[in-house]
Image 1 (cartoon, rainbow, N blue to C red):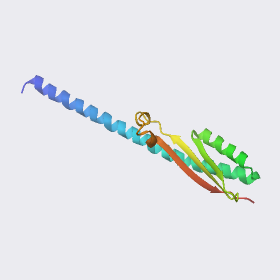
Image 2 (image 1 turned 90 degrees about the vertical axis):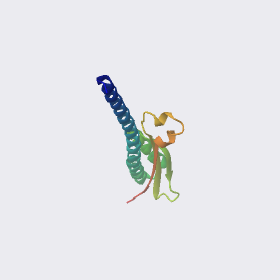
Image 3 (image 1 turned 120 degrees about the horizontal axis):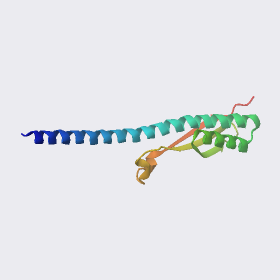
Length: 128
């Protein structure tokens, strides 16, 4: 085996290593972005539902509660998808959605739904 052949083997091995690490890094980034979006959607749904329940409890005004929920959602960088006040006025339900910022998955129509984190929370309205 010549020195040149050994050099080619080392370069080939390094190239495979770099490509493998890049693929693992991409998969980790994509997966991490999705997990972070889901956790943020869950936490924000709690905050949005709490804020809406507090505003509704102050005056039983569904419009004001919905506007407060929209403002809280916008502040957190999520979209308020659904807002409901129970017919008896004792609870509020909200659904928020957050899109994960990925490099590849959000650009492919078959995997785009994987990047959409949706969370629904219900809060009881506490009145004095």
